[in-house]
Image (cartoon, rainbow, N blue to C red; front, side, top):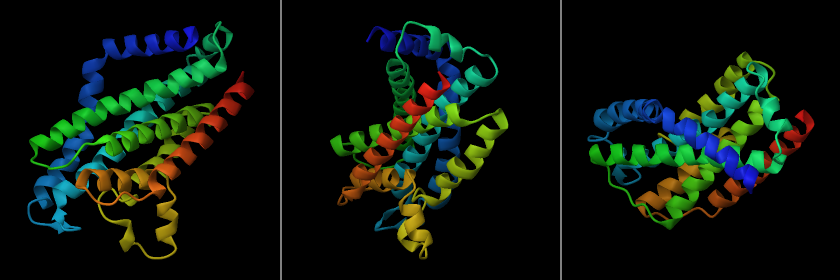
Amino acid sequence: MAGLKAVLWREFLFFKRRWWTITASSMVAPLLYMVAFGWGLGKTVSLGGVAYLDFIVPGVVALSTMNVSFNAVATPLSIARLYDRTFEEYMVAPITIYSFTAAKILAGAARGLYASAIIMGLALLFGARFNVDLRFLVLLSLNCLVFSSLGFLAALKVRSHPDMTRFNNFLITPMIFVCGTFFSVDRMPFPMYWVIKLLPLTPASQGLRAAALGWELPWTAPLLQLAYLTVFVVWGLKTCLEVE
């Protein structure tokens, strides 16, 4: 526990020094989505029986927390491992790999939850209507943990900074647009429908939307998120032990 607290405290001090930069950067993309799709289409288009603005808010929350949680871990850890060579300091420090992994993933997830609070506040200012209940918070937390753990894994797997850029271009960026964030995946043709359904962001988008709009929650959403979280954490731990 001492190692876990030490790494979390280091992450908190980093956040404290740069909180305004972190806050501002968390607002840019959601603001653009709200303006383009919320003001541009939200007042004239409905989807699934609700205003389009209300429909896309859970998707924007899902994709934004994905980006923030992933990049909060992947970018600094990959730089520390490949360029600054400060990753080795953790490896020789008197903390366990398990404490280090847990702290990094929890810190990334916390950044994602912080960003989600900002995004939902912006959505309310834009006039969106949505419910935030226990189901919503659980699915949101799982989404942050899933992509924080994926960021941890990616940071240990890539061999260069361009590799991280390619990882974002080929996996993270496509999920922003196809995983039910701006439209229902039910409209996608077979077999693309099943490919999209199995991507990590899709259960988060669908689950958060169901909880926010009072629809029936798909039982597969939390199960898929838990499955991805387990795979990414175990794989990340295994990779971290190999790096050590």
